[in-house]
Length: 168
Image (cartoon, rainbow, N blue to C red; front, side):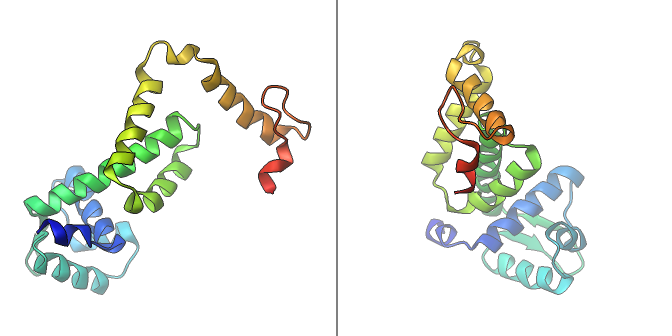
């Protein structure tokens, strides 16, 4: 069944991730909650749940709770890991606000390999946990550069970049 998981659509991955999160938050997932979380109509959820059940990724009986099979949970956890790694990298390393980082991570998580995610995780963890990382000048300079570009039209004295270069 591994070949089947490689061909999963973005929509299927989003449903599995949503079901996974709902189960974590509420111990159960219901089609109504899935519909609300994904902002889709209930009939779309019903159709997708049938597809997921046919592929062996969820357990669901009409009007019942939705649970993930072992394979569905494994896929959902991989998608969630990619999402969290990308979001954390953007927040902790690139100083992007959490809402924007979360949205970007959602868009990026489906097309990135586990090997690349591992590198994001390793680097973000280094920056976050290494006692020396707080003293690394380039990390501080990067944040300075970003703030400086947003406020000043003159070239940055540290990096030489110009504020209006962003719009090009």
